[in-house]
Length: 226
Length: 226
DNA sequence: CTTTATATTAATTTAATGTTAATTAATGGT
DNA sequence: ACCATTAATTAACATTAAATTAATATAAAG
Image (cartoon, rainbow over all chains, first blue to last red; front, top):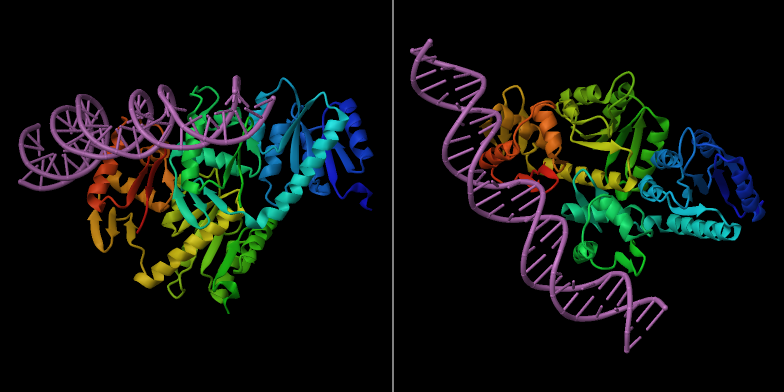
């Protein structure tokens, strides 16, 4: 019963060889593995097996990974799985689109089994924390009102600050690097100076208190609810 | 006595999954929740349970949310509940129809639990003020006469000003951007200069006092009762 | 230590909106 | 049809909040 480590993993890729390679390696670790070879198939399966984690190829015919991910994230009835994208190293455009779609991580091809397993474990650990911390969530972002409610207090923020906070708070705990932040909040084409993000972070910290946004030097920023 | 926070909430939606999702989340907060899956059913229930708040899906078979709302609002024997519409994000503001029907707010799908709860609380707070004050909100918009009643004073407004105010006041707190305002008040096709909206806002502020309409720079305008 | 990344603060620029007045378009009465 | 009024729009300019940059200080990593 519990030789499956209690987790179901869905792997989605259109190349049969990769699919086999991945599922073999993941199964070997004791997880329960299902596979699908495109987005449509994946969506059908997801309903039935309720996976903890989905490894999702980005480039697929019919319905690509990003779209599939979006559909899953919009389904409010589903216990939300962790979703990791499988991407070729070159497709870093997918990084940005992907994360707006709600991906939790990226695993780039070619995939090395050891690394894969360790990522899976770390992702599942995060899932556990997510579920546990659910009750302590403390921030509400109301895009209609352009208003943030933090610990009961309402805060009116200027545009950029709001959008920056919205991004960070959309996935508490996830670290966003500067490029990602620039891409989403400022747009891919705009060029701004080196210190622009910092200053906005500063202003947010002034208003929220500086316990929420943490700097991870050399990497990026992350929002954490208490 | 007060383990229900003293409020009964009725949720109406034809999709069982959404209904379950919503009622689960609202119940969890300690409210007493009833559900109905269409307008007819809702109307029957309303008589018996006297809800403080109704969350009402707009698109439903048999009797849609707008019609249901109208019927409730016309019933003079009923202690009038707060009514919030559940709408898909795509159904645009042209749905001002809903407001003429007497809705107090809109909540757009997909619905995020924390946001939902915070909106419910804010709506119930408003209800309390309503009851305590006089029994009337402090702005009444009379489309037949193109007349606005604000804090007891009647104001005759010219067409554009009226329609602009009507839009803003239709969702107190919601920020409308310029495109939305143009689309609804001027019509999608008409082209007007950059300062046209501002001037109308100016005139409204002159007449209402400038505490009601707030500018959120880079975003839009919002109406707030207070 | 030295380097590199980020923090902080103040100064500056920019973009959005505010304001007023002049212009044009509608409306209404005689 | 004409004038008088009111409304709507445009145009020119002012103001201001917000965004950005610049300059300098700290702090973490190697």
